[in-house]
Image (tube, rainbow, N blue to C red; front, side, top):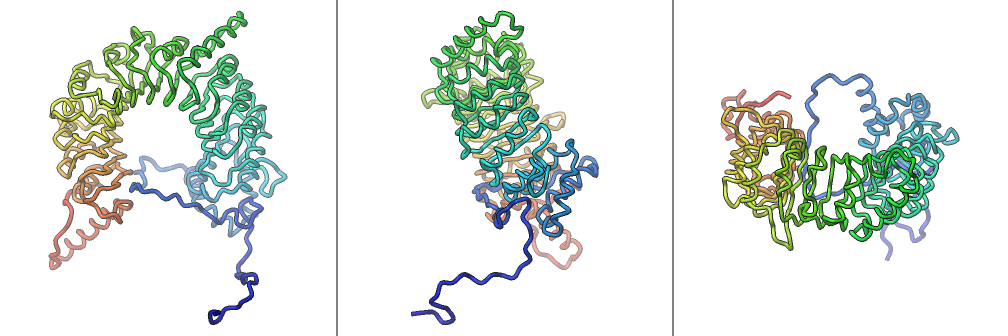
Length: 541
């Protein structure tokens, strides 16, 4: 039975009467018009940062253009195309970064590729100059986009093609093979980059930064890269397939034999490497020593989620006196004696000791934390993570003293995932002399803190980012923190049951609305409705 007002014929749908507006550089009618949502269960609330100075006219113009790209294009597409051609190369990357931040889902393939060639609709716009950044967050990036990038060849100096999981090894190799002047290459998360890509990279002899994290480049393909790219300073190999003790020994043997065939070379392979990331690989103590013994200038070392047991095979890390960052998260550390090295402590800026465990048993305990706290305080330490060490906090004094002596002096402190951490431990954030902690980012997610912790967290007046996910914090406690921390711009309230779900993502607005309501009540003394939230002095932003 047919519905009233319908026809049995399945003809084409009636066209809507609308003005036809050319796409932003795209040939397809629907290329721009489908922004992709990014659903998430997290409940981050944010607000613009307090301006410390009046932005320049250039900055204001770039931000305004990026935020209103679609509207401007709809009003006068021809003018937009023309003006984009006139953008100076010195401003290209700033404008492109703003567009990626503000309009990632509407930047079509046509718009991006049009930046490369006068033959396209919009002419020579963004894909010119020496720096290109294309990521998987831009739905419009595809194989055709990258083929256009490859035409820049030797003009490319910095290239980031991260998170492009659908692009093939052949295409990456095509883009890189003629870019022999590259100084920086980031392929993080481009999972199909492999053997051919690595072969192309080995031709980039001026390369200083190489990020192959989460790619499919086999460990054996690293040999020609290490031999040819002697200027490498940053090498990131997280989750590289089959990078294990056996392969590392084989790689270094081949590299050393290759170096012997070049007796006139003034620089040895890996000699200039300052930053090395081996996260999520099969490296152990012995193979790590094999590798880093050829990197005398090492400043950053990340061996998180590996089988490193605490540098047991290294007599001392004093041979690397320039180390500024050590990450051993989720490593089965048996010893922390390396932290007693004065040369290490004096220079260390970042220390990640998260989820330290062996055979499923947590090894970083209150006793060890007490011992670490007794060491000379590292004056240069800025970033510290103890995330996921579930045995900490069973006793009050060790964690309290650690926070008081070391934690409050850091800029970024991660204490998330410590179930025993409660309000009593955070008293260490408050000093007897009234000095303000240096902390600008604090993670207390998945701990046992409640509203009583608000007074201690409020001591961190320079706080910019605060993570309180899955804690007992309620609306009152969060209000008190906002009252005391005028620089706070990012707040994570995911799974905080004391705060309504609808308020968690917009908590800064809820806070503003509450103060407006209280102010109105004060102006009208006859209105005796009770006020919710703690009434504190409000800092002007």
